[in-house]
Structure formats: structure tokens, C-alpha cells
Amino acid sequence: EPAPDCENATPELLAQLNWDREKDLEAGVRFILDNPAATLAAQHEAWKERNRARLKPDDPRLVPFDQLPFGQQLKARLWRHIVHAIIG
Image (cartoon, rainbow, N blue to C red; front, side, top):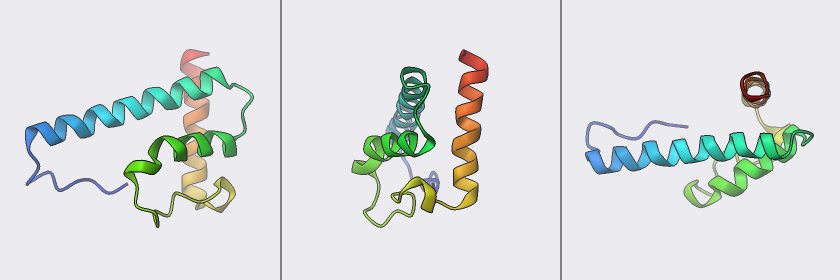
């Protein structure tokens, strides 16, 4: 996702953006741990639901998993493997 305009961002806004990102990462890890047999499509649907409110309706990531560009699909696969490798 594009980086915010950090040159004009207030410290409070930067702190909020970092907190939101950390919260989303934690939720992503929790989904994988709570649903170890879930498909990548289900993992992506959970991500979409968590992020729909903050994304524009035409955001290219708000498509079904199999319609994502290969790089985005690969990132989701790697993320899942990393979580399982580190946490179990």
C-alpha cells in the first residue's frame, strides 16, 4: 500500500498509522493461528473484512484471492509460512 505523506504528517498521525498496522498484523497472525487449515482465499477474505473501512472501494486488493496479482498471492503464502515457522 502507498506510504502516507510523512513529510506533512503530524507525530500523532504517524503514531496512529503505526498502531493500526501493528493491530492489523496481530489480527493476521491470530487468524492464521486460530484457523490453521483455512485456505489462502479465506485468509484474504478475513484481511479484506478487517481493512475494508480504511480502503477506497476501488482498491485493487479488494478482489478475490485468485484475482490478486501473483506478487500479492506470493506475499500471502510467505506470510502464512513465516507465521507457522515462527509460532508453530
